[in-house]
Length: 137
Image (cartoon, rainbow, N blue to C red; front, side, top):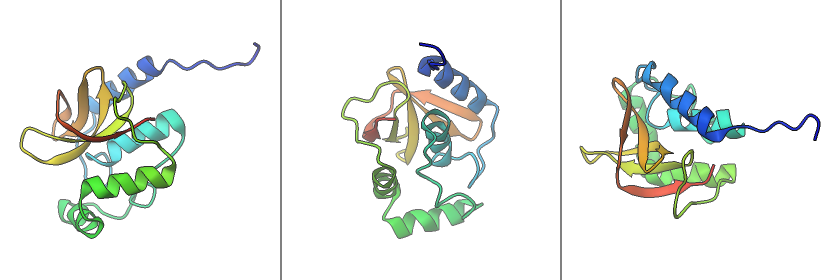
């Protein structure tokens, strides 16, 4: 078929995560919530976090949004549902989820093989973390 664009999700995901290693963690820019949503924008053209962008710049500002929403998991569920993204019981690479990191913090991450990639202070953390919820992208 002429003009049919076939995208390589694995290659685009790998490039996105690789770029993430060079981005410092910035609240309201490239943080544990917005960075996975940036992937959704890149892959699907949908932005679950549109209403959050530009609304906070500090950890305290982010915490205020999370507290008002009842926490990250309820906030993520609402934003993903409003965007029309279905929950995934068994996420595949490129899906997005809410996980618990080694310190017990609840964060958002991108499925990368059998592990999760999450924005960290120094680039990206890639580990097998317990999943609380996930969405098909």
